[in-house]
Image 1 (cartoon, rainbow, N blue to C red):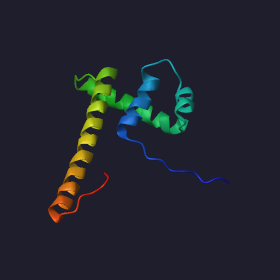
Image 2: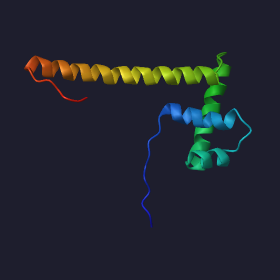
Image 3: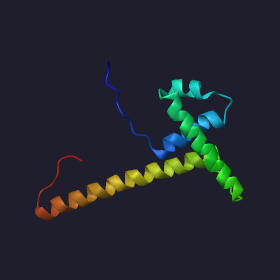
Image 4: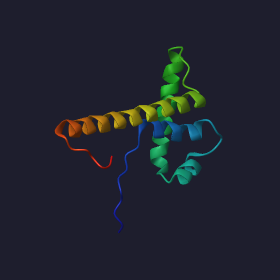
Length: 105
């Protein structure tokens, strides 16, 4: 019996995976196979995203389009990269204050 590896998925990944089903005529099983994930898990993500879209419509809001979701994801990646850069600069300045210069990031 093989051990199962538990994976954690970001909210963005779940939404994008769900929209691969919602925005196309593809089945949950087909998309799950393509992504290498459990169809039952993807089914839950699709239900959650449809529920979210329905709630947005009920409030008169429009859900994000595919291009808006892509732009949001790119912005989040840039913020994450900037956070990493800031952490490195803090560490480097602490080393500089001690008179030690780090050789790598």
